[in-house]
Amino acid sequence: MKEIVTNIIKSIDKYFEGNYLPVVVFVVSLLAMFWLMKKKKESKEVVLYSIILTVVILCPITAKIIMFGIGKSVYWRMFWLYPAVPVVAVILTHMIQKIANKYARFAVVCLCCIVIALCGNSAIARDEFSRATNFEKVPEYVVAVCDMINEDAKEQGIENKKLATCADFLMYVRQYDGTLQMENSRENIRGYDDREYANLVFRCICGSEPVDYDAFAWLLREEKCSYVVLNLEFQEEMSDALLDRGFTPVGYYDKFIVYRDGLLNAKENIEKNETVVKFSKEKSGYLIGQYSSLTGDQASFYTITDAQNHLILIDGGWDGDAEYVRKVIEYFGGKVDAWIITHPHFDHVRAFNKLLASADCPQIDAIYASEFDYDTYKEEAKKWDHFEDFENFIAVTKDRDNLYYLHEGDEIDLFGLKVDVYHDYTSKDGGDAANDGSLVFEISGNEQSMLFCADTGEAQSETIIENYGEKLSADYLQLGHHGNGGLNEKFYRMVSPKVAFFDAPEWLMNPEQGTNYTTPENIALMEELGAKIYSFDSAPNFVVLK
Image 1 (tube, rainbow, N blue to C red):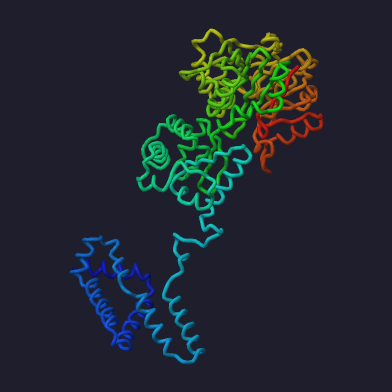
Image 2: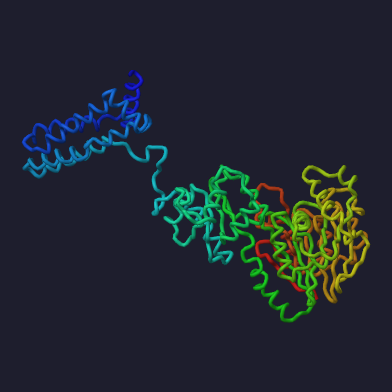
């Protein structure tokens, strides 16, 4: 019995939150109704009902029965049955009607409003509520994320803005922006949605069971979900998994991250490029393409094709770029005639490794690489080199008889293109094991050439200059190490290109103050030399080598 009484007191405290003025106002109004309106049958019934309800709620025996029926935690909801609002409204209206003086009546009305206001607590005083900051009265993160998606869709030319979202975001989206289509709905949360795929997507994003991320990525693309919104507080693993499967990070806000399907418009962005259109008509020279990484990070991925549809690939980027690389290969005919891997760093070789390990790997006629000695490189490699990427490269190529190693001084012909190798791992002069072991090579057409420097750094500059200085001049240049560091100023001045390719996203092209990135210095140097600059911001970028 003592426990029941304690629960009754706790429920009263929980409901009124220490403010018992509403109780006083209600009781006083009830007494006034009984005294002033006692001739009315309805008044007596309301008073009697309130008394009986009080006895039922406060009596330990009936209280125990109620608690057993609806639960101790929600027992306080019984107080909702009190007719407090109509009783107070009726008695105040009755009393005000009896005041003849309009000024006195106005004063009493104001006094009543003040008393009523004091009876309650402000909604925004509670932790679960906050003052609205926008016209739609939705959380600020909804506004920020929706605006982010709309801005990105406009930049990417995406008309079908369909979202797959986490539960705490989807509740408000359509309230703010009706142009955004939703894969998930409130019915998914309630369990009433009869759409099989929508339910599967919702269970993947919001469920607690392990997710088959390959199947999940397929499902998102099957449902044509342009964007995915995740709550990183709960879905950090899924965020990494989407990144590895070709979904591009658009941006962050608070605890939310937005991804775009990186394969959207992949082919369209190539075929609508003016240089590609012109090359397709003229069928003259070699079309060279630079592609950005779907991961939003620095990477290296180039294609070279000719009028006979030969296709040469250089590197490929991260594992998250693998499906993008596959799409590009499909666009150019579905077969790779030659694939050059400059060095076994993650942002250059992982897409290659992933595709070769896949069951439906595209046909590759020849693979060219810098010859890294396993034992020496393993001893030299630092943690940031991720030696396992080299081991994976060895694993996926070990049974192939079409792997050829290039060395400094080699000259080969690739479908009419002359390839001169100026540097490789075996000729490096100390320096950074993986980066400085990169292939440096020049491809030459009939009139023009392009120099690829991969990730080769400053320590190799003088050696290459000494051995090949007179040959270094080129029309097109891929800067060493994405334009951040790389070879020295003397080297680049000798090249003096017309077009300079930086394999770098916007954050690396224009780094925040206080960072050690040297990309801006190399940009300034290229501008001084009069070179046109291409980066990931405008990718895919194309030039024609004559």
